Image (cartoon, rainbow, N blue to C red; front, side, top):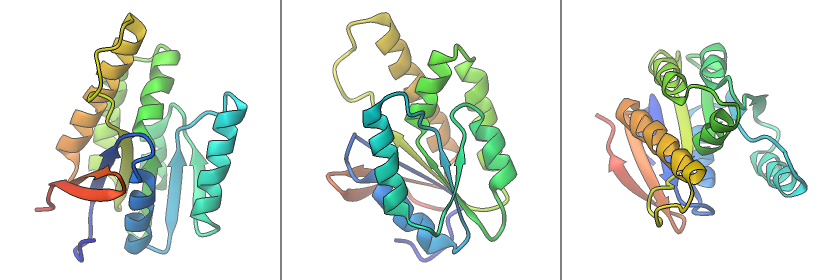
Amino acid sequence: MTSSPVQILFVLGGARSGKSRYAQGRAEALSRSRVYIATAQPFDAEMQERIACHQADRGAGWQTIEAPLKLPEAITVHSGPDRVVLVDCLTLWASNLLLAEEDAEAATDRLVDAIRSARGPVVLVANEVGLGIVPDNALARRFRDIAGRINQATAAAAHECVAVLAGLPLVLKHPA
């Protein structure tokens, strides 16, 4: 962990790579006032169980805000100079945008504006979905492309970017 305060930290990695645990630890080191912005929607029992596990891992020191679509607005409302905002995760947000037939490019622009103008530190989590094979159907390719564009825009706006592989952090972009 760095000793200097992080304004925007972007953490990405594969599924079950340890990225959420790493991001939570970094966020907890930044402030005692913590807001967790969740983008997951519990469409089935398995996702309900995942959400419950994440909530249990966080404990009572977090305020949870559900923002499956209105993520930029939630960041704007809940960021503050003495409060860290943790967003988990941008990949589910991308999926939500796709399913709701939202304009992902415009939503990404709003996200970047929100994190750049946040009044306190923001930690964002995403899956890296572009390392696998090319999906065999148009919907999956569209999702991969949307998620990749969101990741690129977020990384460009972030002060620090960390990839987590097998639970190990690899700094991709150092804070200036």
